[in-house]
Image 1 (cartoon, rainbow, N blue to C red):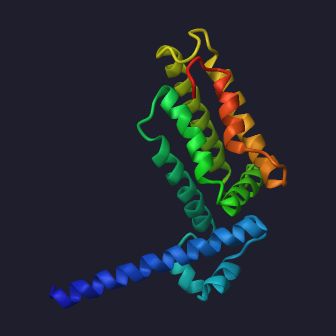
Image 2 (image 1 turned 180 degrees about the vertical axis):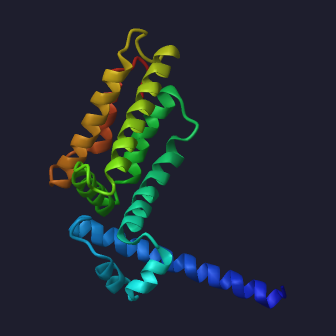
Image 3 (image 1 turned 45 degrees about the horizontal axis):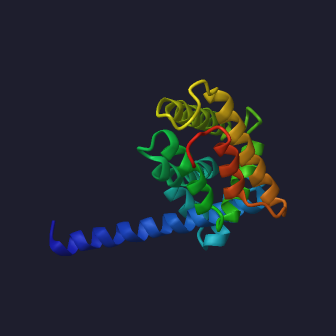
Length: 201
């Protein structure tokens, strides 16, 4: 393959990647405004200035594939923050995740809408949300258990109860914030987690 052909391939790849990003941004906006059920590939393609066929070229699974890509993007950012953390450092990272989302109101709103819709077992994202929530609970429970092992929490701490309580508080604060209440999600969740620890969070 000649150098010009390689450069052409690279150029085409960059254009394709940029187009996928545009489609994802449009899908995110549509899901945020309408929820998954009321959204359509035609509306997403209209906003990005493409035909439905063009959108489906990049996301062959249609609306379901777009939904999965939007959810994966949110989870990837959170995963980068907590990666390789244990114990109290993992718990500190939870507040950091909240901080990074304060300027992404649309993303949080979309996620809340989609997670509520997905309570229905027939929803295409039902398994995603169910498995993700179980994974998050296990991760936070493990972090509380490690904190107790490291001397950063009482040795007799009920790690599962602490995890469920902390996650319920965080999600509750999110909902109140979305509904216009003047709440500090970062400080509120940090204060709640702190009550289970003996070391400053």
